[in-house]
Length: 312
Image (cartoon, rainbow, N blue to C red):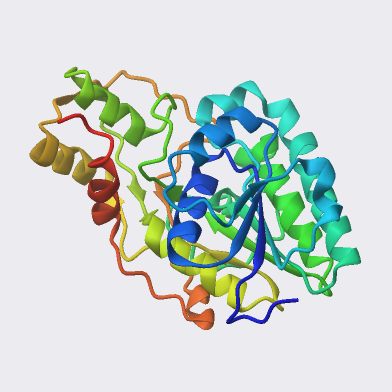
């Protein structure tokens, strides 16, 4: 297989997803790695690939051809993140996740030098009355999420991966991710804000504050690249940016920069498919052990990436 300072063969499962598009864009413009993109929707994927300037090292490959190639790293971007999708497809989340995870695990058993990067979620910490303090999983299931399949699936996969210490698997817990590749027809707070700005409509929310850490795509790419360099590991890490931001600060900054008009409705009920999370970010800095040092704050991330999405 390729050594860490040479080009690698990287497979990306779920290549039409928000995060996968970022990785494809950044890998293609910053490295010589060969990218093998897996998706069940070839047309949408090829439409996206056509927007990338350097496609020389990018190939589409169907899932059934996984074993026909030799990969250094497999990145699993398959999953549901949009809140309404989590709620509408809750009974399918475990089945879908297990199907592709099992596929990758079987590949690793046959190709022991291959690395698996799985995108987990900050939801595994279970309690969000304060920021997560470390990367350790609780031994008990959160009572508030005990029947939430999204939460239980993420816990199941992480525990499964730690039970296979001879395989090279890193679970990267993502708390908040935002970029120019996001689908604005989603139920995320930031998506709704941008749609309100673009349509020149007032944005309504309640007075319930929250705190989020949005990792910048370039910081996230740094983290992924460092994981690839440290391929012989089996552990979980929390993803984080330089600093978090509050809901009130987001509203104020978008008002100042993009003339967002917003107001509060005390009785406004907001659906949270995995429960309300006041402090949805981590203070764990385990990623420092592999050399990760974020550069961008949450505010920088939101302003940088939203500039591509807001109509002038």
